[in-house]
Image (cartoon, rainbow, N blue to C red; front, side):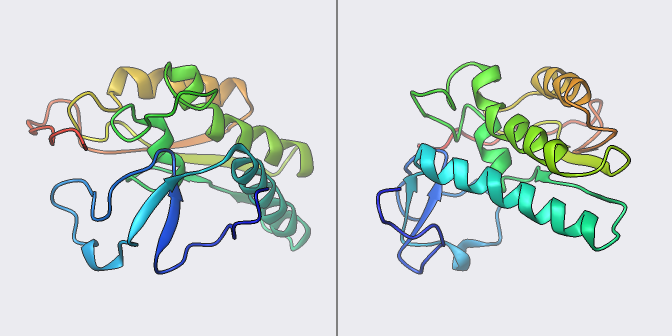
Length: 173
């Protein structure tokens, strides 16, 4: 690591890509929670995050929980990597879908490595991020297939039914 803290502060947080202060999807009611700026997460920070997800799942398994569900929907950190509208990275975590899904799949693999085989692994993922040039239903279908192949037993697909009429939001700058 470069010595920067991995925790969000009032002045800075990490994301898939750097973003100007106040950049949020249209319609969000969380404007008051925004940090001053978002900087691109380093690969070391992503490695640490994967380890934290695995550690949390292991602790839950040891405490007798039946399973865990990483949240990869609704513009939260992991889901923001899936969208080409919010993920502008030029490394192994950006660009084509397989790269944008890498963080989520690494989290799933790391959890599977540290929990018993009968520990339920579920993932919540959205069907679209409702942004122009964003994450699409077709991409969600592919990621869901990869999740099943990685050992996920339950997928909670979040979002409107495909027949609903909705207007995608403009792409973030």
